[in-house]
Image (cartoon, rainbow over all chains, first blue to last red):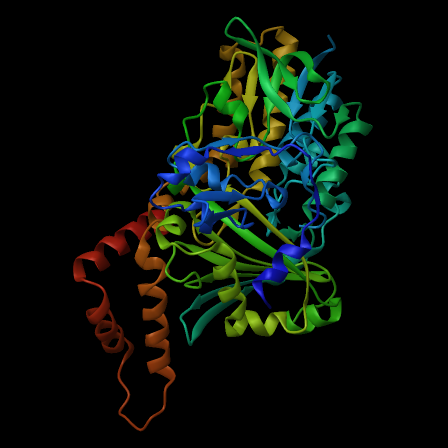
Length: 91
Length: 432
């Protein structure tokens, strides 16, 4: 199995407003950027060219790992609007 | 503004159980769920152990609840890179009702339990995210719901809003989390046929098996699991957040390594991936349990960190349902007396302390530091497998007794001091 396949098998109802906001100026000074590898949904990617975190909230599994791992307070972390976000079917 | 007797936040096992009990006793209960349906936000890779309180909630609970398989077989794997040692426990007694443990799907189970609450007269509203608490002085008197900007008032709020419980935080009941108290679980569901699962795990009828793996997480504190449902396997790993961060590794890559281990790979042959999920688990044990009540509010389930592992037992759902039930009993008493003060609601903690919920958490409170012993996840699994390999290896060299093999294996890897410290820690957490 290829890891990329994993992410194709989760259902979402995406809201137009991101539920999590990333404070880019804080992230630029972060030396570990742990969010880019601990997030189980690969929501965070460091964009070297633009010197910023590319954040894709659409595939967020709402687990809260990033919130606990970020020690810079760079995240304004909220659950999606009621009824939106991840929709586990059988898990 | 609409007013209820009680608002329960979160329609998981804790919340639905609390709502059900209170509705059965005639209280006007509002059960709020942020998911589109109950269970849509929950992950479970697991087994719900049998416990009698469930039958006080719903007669014949274990007959009616939509479970998948009853667990008769527990397999423990200690893995090294190229070998693994396993221990299988199976008991005839676990194959007779009342069954000892069950595998299930949370979106199915949670929906069933939530429907029972509406049958008992509770009001269930899904797609409702609670944003904040409403206060009257220093007393909680309701919640602010995201949808329609609605404020709802009640005499008591029961917060069952899950592992991240923002309500317990807003009420000042819990401290900020620290990563070492939390574990990340990532899981994938794989479909096979019922016959294939029965054959691979040597099961018949609705019998089920669970597998737990130690030493399969690349030295990161954590473990792996496989649970059998009727036609699917729940396969995943659990990782302590601080250890994961330190490792610099991605959880899905560790998961991929895990499913590549020979025993896991064999179980999964020709299986089709159905769903991927991730969730946090409270793993701080007894010391992580927050203050459980304040004026006008109680906390239950994962929101109260009522969840533990000692390496052999992994429990949460049973503690959630039992704590929801006891929160409900406390609120029912509070209504009889017309007193919703923190003093009256403190009965809740007393009930939990008398029951298996806080007793078990207390019994295994030392297990937390045992489960944070790094060597348990790398050196020891390798050691065990090295010893087993020499015991069974035939290569023409004279055989040695186990003590000698063991001592030689220990000598190169673990200092005498660490070994004694670990044995004491392990002993304190599991043996005495």
